[in-house]
Image 1 (cartoon, rainbow, N blue to C red):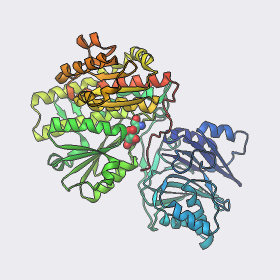
Image 2 (image 1 turned 45 degrees about the vertical axis):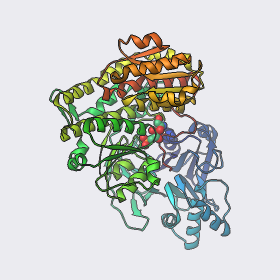
Image 3 (image 1 turned 90 degrees about the vertical axis):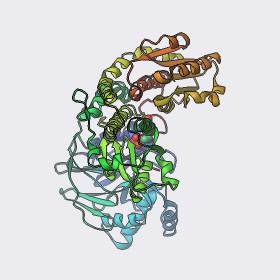
Image 4 (image 1 turned 120 degrees about the vertical axis):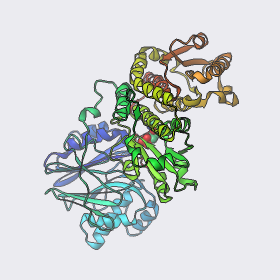
Length: 612
Ligand code: AGP
């Protein structure tokens, strides 16, 4: 949440920072701001998107070869011009942008007010810039030392970038629990919340660790120290990210592009991990820890949002194929409820961004209890990827639409491959079933392509239900979590209230909601419970609900009773969520579009939730 971009070098900072902020807009889009230094310090801030900031800055002095920028997702203080970052110290010398939450801000603020500081905004962030100013003035410190001192007093999470008008040839950055990446260019440096604003200029980066402070200087020097002043020797990494991956590539929205990328991204998630012909699955991240994984008393899957839905499907997969008991936890609940975690437990964290604060916090807690931490992450080099003992990247490529689509299917691929690998190791899968699963897995990308060909039909159905105020999603077994995911997709981008339920639970309450205005989206592909799902559909129709059924190709029975059907190809049941979720994604996309919603940047949301 909140995106930071900073630049120091020989080029004009403004276009670099604005372009970078656009790339980071997925992290928050309540307000944007920029500070530029060119003899004088100019700060521009505006409620709204980066475009609003650009419009506001037009015709103003935007010169400067050093600058810091920010796109905000509001926590403390409403989204307006004053609460927008950067924040400036009382003496007008120090500017600061921040991602995270300073939990002890009110105590710090009180103390600073007593010392004569005056505050303008309602943010927690503003205390930091005053605190830095206070240390600098009191002890006559260079900016990096003043930052260091101030951070020893701050409780909470932060990625900050600070600039001091009196030292125009340096920028200072620091992180704790919120990401910050340093890009090393040719006689220039970049600091950003992730590598996307940097990649156009350099692929050499340093991922800062918690409680590290970096000072970058115009002369090409940089230094990383810990908050306790220990000099660090950070690893410079070369990242493999192409600029085209960050563009819409001819699609109207990132979400649509990402939906359509799935045949390819699913293949990428499988690459080098499976060969049906030769009859093997090997998930690299597991191999060094196989004894611990196969011998685990149980696994705990921790995640949030869509990743939590993938985790639920993971529970079905691991228990069904590998016979390992799994508990699925909301990371935020696991973190705060004093759970029993033993050394023989394995905690599997799922996260697209690898930066979700609740998931990170849950992992840190489990680490202290000695559990093995396994990460299933998309974002390479992210905090969760670095904190875990081992793990597997899902290789879905950058996901920019706030609504997760391709990351979900890639998480499912990795979970399925892990379950097959473990099942084989533990001897819980018969050879023939194992082979059947391998072949079925390799056919998934083509089957996803086939479903995507039905976009026009799905668009038509979207038009029929777009004015609904509520929607119900039903599924059984492996497809119950898909119902939850379908409901979340609809809620978050179209603002229609939607609930996902196990189909059989409908009669225990939600059936009371059904009337002629209620669309009920039913996943009716389970061979094992087909007749039961047919009964559920009959129950909905008896109450005049509108049934949209996802059925297997060639289905005849449900077609007779449902209002609309979407056919998907058959596969083995454990892999069916990889197919049944695709129509859900397209349906939500088109409904949101028809309702005039901002599909890629839905209101109040941010892609990377780096606050607890
Ligand atoms: C999904 O569409 C969401 N926008 C959201 O629920 C997301 O899945 C959640 O915030 C978890 O993010 P992560 O996978 O990056 O940890």
